[in-house]
Length: 119
Image (tube, rainbow, N blue to C red; front, top):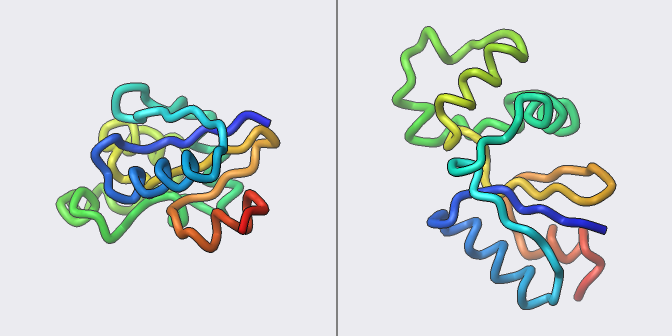
């Protein structure tokens, strides 16, 4: 099963997730989504799987707080994807995409242990 971890190389949470996966001998690819923007179709799929854009977007981030209020209610997929294309740091980190297409966001050791069936 192919596993891809999307995030930012300097993000502490992404570094923790990568270190945990390496320590658990889990093969994965890491994609810096600032350097390699995530295609709109994939962003939409992530949002659908997670239960909506609010689950994918980090509204506690500095980037979100600095957005003008007029941009904080995009309303549809096209506007959300445009907003994320302009501000990739709005996406919660990291995004884990497994070979079966399942997606999760964020990192906690307990959740990763459950996802990967490790102890």
